[in-house]
Length: 157
Image (cartoon, rainbow, N blue to C red; front, side, top):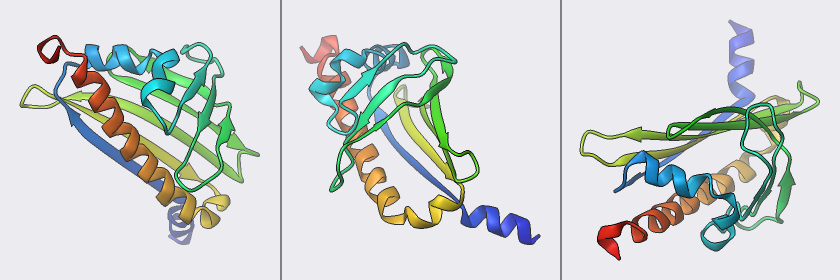
């Protein structure tokens, strides 16, 4: 039992979502157009590389009230129109994390866009403030994606 308590202490998760008035295919089109991110995404304005499982990409994250950081995560999973999962680690036992972008149809015909980030390892004990600021960044990105997608729908032109 004690082992489970310790692992919960060294684990944090962010789950930030927004409903977008568009089909998953339209959102996916914007989501995988990394070159356009700098025009609408102030939180992750740079993504370089191929979105292929097993490949490494380079991302720049501009977390609110923090210095910009560069990460080089590995792409773990890509399911077109549904999911992107990337992540990485620092000496594996010190810190590991993964970031999922999920697209889920809702019962009212919209699409729920979710970003789920899982932080694991002893380093998490010292990341409380950064995790809170990161969640703010995810919510800002979600709203920016919603605006970018919805403004470009044919009925809004």
